[in-house]
Length: 365
Ligand SMILES: *Cc1c(COP(=O)(O)O)cnc(C)c1O
Image (cartoon, rainbow, N blue to C red):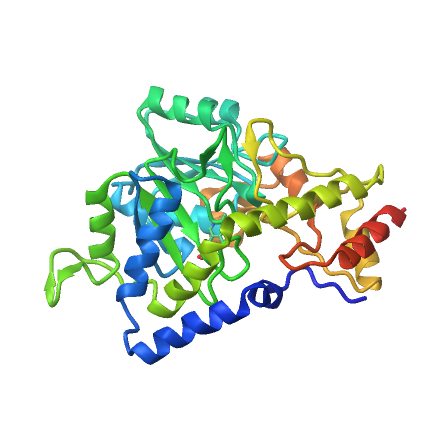
């Protein structure tokens, strides 16, 4: 059996006829940019999070972070605290605005740790980015309280956490803004690139909509210098199908995670667990193993794919050499980078495929 780490063809096939219909509807309409599908998706995605939310569709998750932070006024001289094991895009959203990322160690659950966060606050701290990694979510009671107490902006990176909850409340609804990616492998995935910003503030969302279209709210009248970062009609129409089934596909992911958690039994492997108080949506199923690199080769010999999320933490990337970090600065983060492994996990994975992976993992010595 050949089992890749991920397969987007399977999620397409779950609702293939509806995706086909949505795509053709757009192609035949002749309306391809900023039309009725984007408008409908924005209001449906906002309503999914609650009656008092607004949404702007964008070209990617990175753009959501970059534009969101820019329009919140984050810039040169500002420090932005982020956990050091986050994805590089979460950090680039900060540095594209010339602000300085301040890396802190994550908690044992790989999420933002309220204690290391609070210890890193200085008079220059302007904002905090909580990256809900792997479909888990951090203690949002503590994080929102710290931000409120110190007057800090809170940005939630929900690129891996669509529909995740903290005490029944959805990821993206706690911060000043929630930033989403619809990259094809995400829990709500397009068939190309896409992203969005969620906020309670309708004026802010209007500003994002102006910025994403060359700073133009009215055609050929430019009120600010903006960018071209539009979610297109085709992706919006396809996302509307995915959104309709998001509760259902979230349950499918939770079932897959439960099956792995009850089936995997090997003292060499640490399994991920749902943080108490949260509902994880299992973007990835990330195990930890001291013999990680041997495990990858072993799985490969059995035709099982795997991915490392992520092998080099941002503070050790060449792009961030100018920050002056060195190996050993963030030992727990670096330890995670050398031990984490995402095993095959995708919608439409069969029990037979999953059992094959589980048995292989249990036989690893
Ligand atoms: C995917 C991802 C992003 C970036 O999204 P793109 O749409 O690929 O630009 C940002 N943050 C996290 C945590 C991600 O997983």
